[in-house]
Image 1 (tube, rainbow, N blue to C red):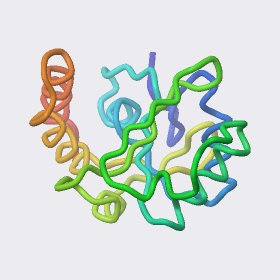
Image 2 (tube, rainbow, N blue to C red):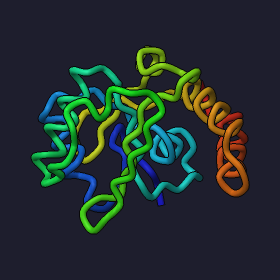
Image 3 (tube, one colour):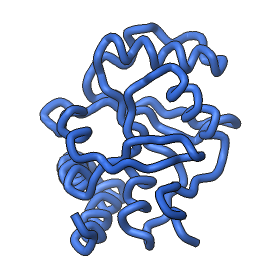
Image 4 (spheres, one colour):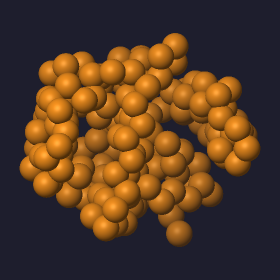
Length: 164
């Protein structure tokens, strides 16, 4: 199965509502992780949607408002204004993870600088470039263990053959 048709990522599940809510709220986010890998490396499968958030207070408020509109009402307005967050949204409605850049890793602005323009559910989104994914995966592999570390190392190997 292909992971994209033209500039549209192929993704299934309840994440469409999440992407639409973030977009409508004006939230600054970027597709990273497995979906971004699948864009650049067609042999890579992806199941969830990893979304990197700009960790500014203003953007955190926009994200919190979007989540509140989806019925997730216990989200403080400042919840996403910190580095290193990994917030899983994995339930009957969503299969996603909201992330903020890791301390000492690539910043949101750096990742955004060479991001690809794509569509997810026909909604324009930014998508991490091969260069950004290499940096993120290398940084993640340093601190991961076991199967999680191996997943990042496997992704790095796949990215070796991807055009930058």
